[in-house]
Amino acid sequence: MGEVRAVVGPHWLRQRKKARTRAAIRRHALRLFGDQGFDPTTVEQIAAAAEVSPSTFFRYYPAKEDVLTGEGVDALAVEALAAQSPGLGPVAAVRAALAW
Image (cartoon, rainbow, N blue to C red):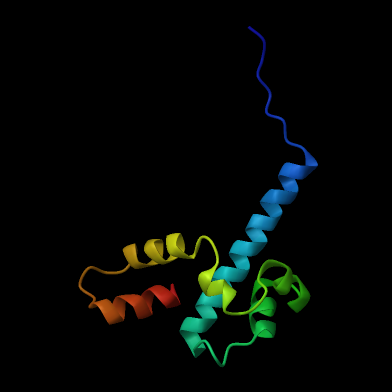
């Protein structure tokens, strides 16, 4: 039998990079929202934390609110909540998950 090779082209690499950038923006935004609140957190702060420009932020999310409603947020929230100590009450667990 012949050897099977994985084909990795530039399109696939671009998609991976975009996914990593989107995830980094979301992760830093959620951390900042947990640290200082949603309203005081600026797009510029999120972009700086994710090491992208504000214009790059807007390529991935049309507005700051979209970070909370975009795809994948549910999975991140479930993962963050699952990582919390079982002894925490619901409000404390959500707060800790936002800071995660």
